[in-house]
Length: 177
Length: 141
Image (tube, rainbow over all chains, first blue to last red; front, side, top):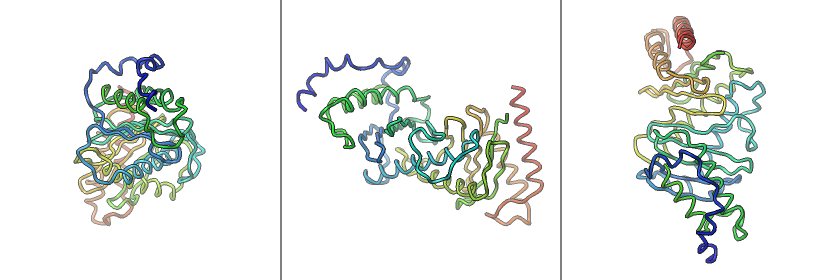
């Protein structure tokens, strides 16, 4: 894995262009946490930048977060007012099936959520005053595809421990929100 | 097309005490609305546990692909939440107005039992007027 970490300059050209406007706010730090889950609920990546309050240990926290997203997904699919056939509450949904959500807001934080067709869930927790984060989440997913999925040394379904993707994903997230 | 699709009121232990549909597609039976209400109650509680900073009071606004959910929690723990069109404005004000109607016509009703389903004629009447007024105001804007 050493050689992979050393070639940052050449690899950088593979990066898709940053979506316009995402870096315009300057290097403020509005991001609190970033989670990446796979379809089975394994936390592939967790980073935090500003988290003064910790109520649970890390493993419990990841489980609670995944459970919240799972339940909110079935909640939104069931309550969707525009669809006649809603299915049953509590039945596991396939990625992209039924109505999904992309963010929720409380008085202390905003959770931005994206689910890809392969079941990867990206969660970015930011300050409640930040705007729509769907484009930045797509960009982070692009980084995941470029640096993790295309890496032959990565074993699918295990936490991401490669140096380069973690570096790129976290530096993008910490500098752009 | 209505700005508001449906309204739920849940008591402090998560039981559904009022549900009104204003024209969402498909039918939802009583069991489903009860389940959704208690599910929302627990989601609201979990979201407070996951907060990165202190003082979180739970979800105010959930943005989904086809609707927005606005939630207002009173100081006593009663939650009012409305399903509405994406980007519908002034929903917080409408929910606060509904809370006022609840205090006036439900809590001040001597025959109303606390934490039990709401069956008050005057509340129904004033609520439908408030929602109607909101719709007219939306059309005028």
